[in-house]
Amino acid sequence: MQPGIRDRTLEGHESARRRGKTIGGAGVTDESMLSMALHLRDQEMSLRDIAKRLVITTGAKKGQHLSPATVMRMLREHDEQAATAASA
Image (cartoon, rainbow, N blue to C red; front, side):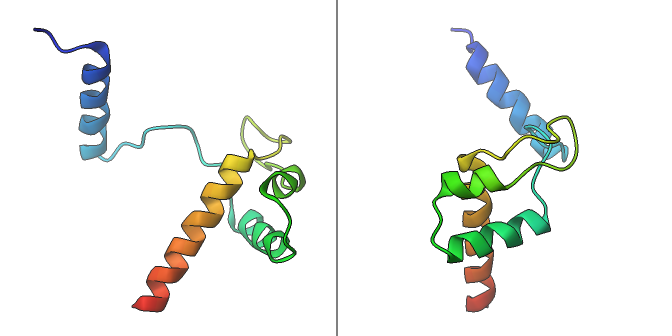
């Protein structure tokens, strides 16, 4: 039985990662967005409200707002790095 399109695609992604290539779009967040998101989270704002206040400053999506999912991912990655640094 032949591998399906999904299987071949996943194999291609894995091969690209081994060669050091990144999969996905360009990053749109930066340190200033993270610090603003942390400040707004400390004020107990929702992810949606935080996303409405953050604007992408460079690239093809310049001028657009971040999605709540991007804000959540950015904050989660920060929290994970902070936890790792604190336990080390």
